[in-house]
Length: 153
Image (cartoon, rainbow, N blue to C red; front, side, top):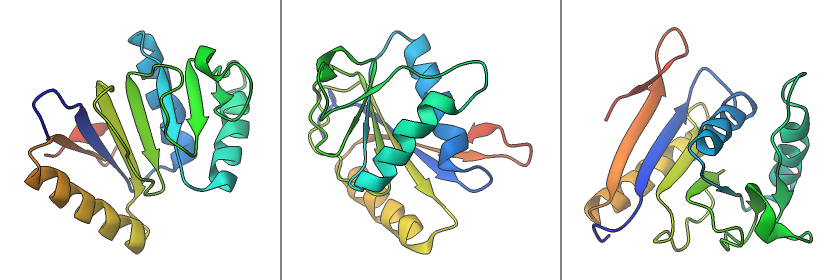
């Protein structure tokens, strides 16, 4: 990886679910003024995320759209199976072991994986090793006993 590549942050889910973690990370991304691209290879997972972002809090929702729908380029958060950065996002979220694709256009990539799933855990470990060997700027985040995120590597 070149020095111009994005920061790549691994989020190890142990105490919380994707439904609990992803909306908060997306909100923080939007607070920075960044757009987000959420990538998953599983259409059913993307449909679930799509529904969840509209209803995840009683008093709020996260404005977003699907890459296969009109006006994808205008969406602050875009959900996609292809990973094409149609909305000019600065943040890329990788779910369920999806391929990262080209990352040069992003400031930060979030790789979110379920540490309670052995396949996901092994996939994340392999991805970490590959990216580390390539010289990527990596960080590893895990939850402490109180559920707060702490940088562990």
